[in-house]
Every structure is written in structure tokens, then in C-alpha cells.
Picture 1 (cartoon, rainbow, N blue to C red):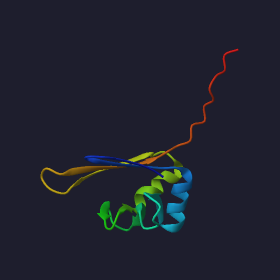
Picture 2: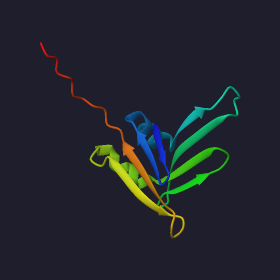
Picture 3: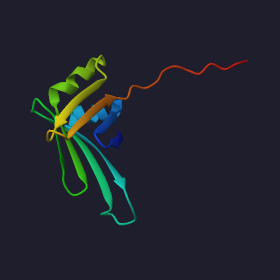
Length: 113
């Protein structure tokens, strides 16, 4: 899982292994160690839910992104590679949530002889 945060956007890229784990276990997560203390961690989890819309919650350095389970099912045939949601928290605070399928690149670089 790859994460990118900006002021008004959260971008999460999931590879095939992440998607398989998400489908099998209902959750995938990444833990970033911020120091030597075992409690100095930042954690992000993507969790499947029965909701029709995504939600985001943060508690104690742990971001939880709840995604509609049906939205990930579309990725089984790999036709849909991005989910984009706009989440309005107030009239002036809109967060864009992007969930992307990080497809492997199969092209090979050409070697000049």
C-alpha cells in the first residue's frame, strides 16, 4: 500500500496483494514506524464495510478508511482501476479520497545495441 497526503486529498494505491488481502480478510493496513519507541507509529487501514459511501475516521495516529465492499468487487476483472470520492465535512472543507489499483507495469525497456 502506498499513501500520499496533501491538504485536501488522500491517495491510496493498492497493489494486487493488497487487494487480495482486502477481499480475503476485509482489511489491509500499513504501519509506519516514527522512532525507536514501539508506540511511535502511524497506522492507516483500509476496511471493507457494508455502507454505500466511504467514511474516514482518525483516532490515536490511526486513520481508518471504510470503503463500500461492492466497490472493490469491480476490481476482480481489473477494468476499473480508480475510485474517487469527494467527502464534504463543511461548506469549505472538502476532502478528495482516491483509491487506486497499482497495476504492475509489464513493458520492458528497449536496449539500444
